[in-house]
Amino acid sequence: MFGLETSLLIILIICILAACAFEFINGFHDTANAVATVIYTHSLKPMHAVVLSGVLNFLGVFSGGIGVAVGIINLLPAQVLTDQNVYQSMAMILSLILTAILWNLGTWYYGIPCSSSHTLIGSILGVGLAYGLIHNDMSSVNWSKAGDIGLSLMFSPIFGFVMTILMMFTLRNIFRKNEQLFVEPDVTKYPPWWVRATLILTCSGVSFAHGSNDGQKGVGLVMLILIAIVPGYFAIQDYQNPYKIQKELQEVASMVNTLTDKQLSDSKVTKDINIAKEKITEIGTILNVSFAKNEIPKEKRFVIRKNILEIDKKIKKNIDHPSLNFTPQEISKLKYALENLKTNTDYAPYWVLLIISLSLGLGTMIGWKKIVVTIGEKIGKAHLNYAQGASAEMVTAGTILLSSAYSLPVSTTHILSSGVAGSMAAQGGLKNLQRKTLTNIALAWVLTLPVCILGAGGLYFLLHQLL
Image (tube, one colour):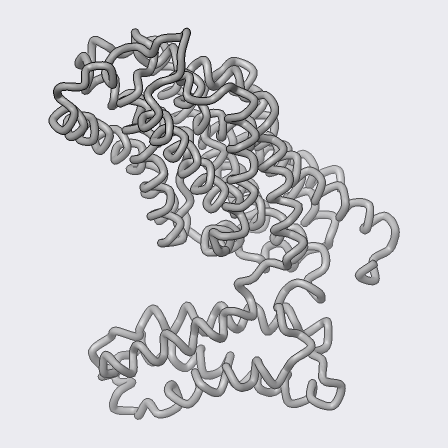
């Protein structure tokens, strides 16, 4: 398979299974947050809730696009995984996956809501930094993308906390005469049908949104593995259709090549645009010799991938620069052409989506109880009521879906946990929060990134010496 010798094929299978294990753990670790509200308000029985959540997580992976997955892939520049021998690449992959799995399992065992997003991203940064220190190359991490992701992960819980407080005040004003929404649920009966329907709908929304965002992280992880081990098959999507790539490349080239020397008066802009032109020419040369066999040579496919990413980076960096004098229409047209060209690098095979969907969906149905107890009983000094559950989940689902639309990974755990805390604060002030639980969640939030960075980096240093 893929022309690999038996030992490498076994390593490939082990790595993919490890990625599926990470997503499986993500299912029962993170999605417990989604079902906590319907379980503790007695809107659904636990088994019905987790099955519903599992199915919607499965569907969410298929419907969420791959923007977040691409962000995960680009966080660790793929050339880091291919500019060394394949066993060293596998040391990096296994280091980050094992670290992420161990930290997730540890926090789950103690019932601490912890972000699988922080865990995975911290582990990727750890191996990237370790590689950079070993090879004296700090470009081994995409710092720009890391900054965007860091801000997203940092501010989304604060947003969840504040917005849930506002949602609670809104519901209080709308339903001021309906006090049953704001008291602890009666354990002997279901809530009113319309309350129950609302809570089931919000639970479904969080589950679907979780799949659309967190599921993509597993997709990105599997694509990193495939690109590292078999770049000849997965570096670009349409390697058997050089004509398609040539057409998309020409659409970009037709606009870039019209730039005059006068427009390229700024030295920094000129340098970037000339690099883009060189990469366009290099891809064109490769494609010209590919037409006879109607297939791009395996050894050239990763070169095309790197060049496409470089073209996109250099042009988008300068596209709004005044010296280029592009009209708004030309800018829009050039961005559209770049997006078409990047479909060759920003993709995931159907079977990757399928295995990650199954892993996440099945994981949702197992091991949910520990986190549910924390969310339902230990954040506030009273059990969740109907209004709190609905508020926290509506804000969580909306925040995740908005983040997915902008291709930003966020933590379902932290948004919902902070949302529940916000709902408790809105109900009875900060004194209504359990300090011990919030301290544990905050510590997990603060420690996850550094622990995973150090853990994955240290493990890679060890494996690097052994291989």
